[in-house]
Image (cartoon, rainbow, N blue to C red):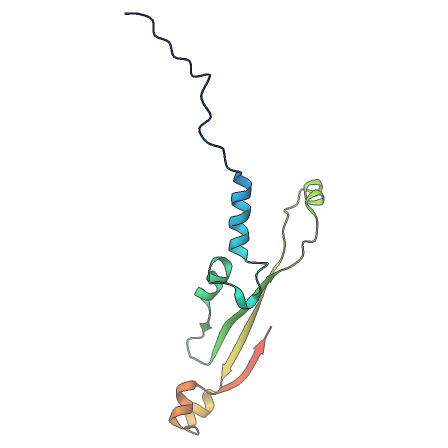
Length: 128
């Protein structure tokens, strides 16, 4: 049989390689929704994660912890400082939650009517 050689050194350009860092950056921006106003955030990414976990109620039904919003704070050190000091480039994540304490004493004593009992009277609300 004759010698048969193939040269794979010259391959035609098939497709451009996408910018992989740009793909990751866009995905992360979509996850954070940091530039989206609070009222217009969709239930995806971090917003969706918080919405899926909250509200958290205690076992006795006396109080409930509700998610209100979140924001990404300013970075403390820029990228160059982090590289020089061997630190992680990071920004704080701050969330606002609302603690609702229900007036269970009025419920237990029967001092409220049936319609009020279905909506649980609120004793106190704190938001931080």
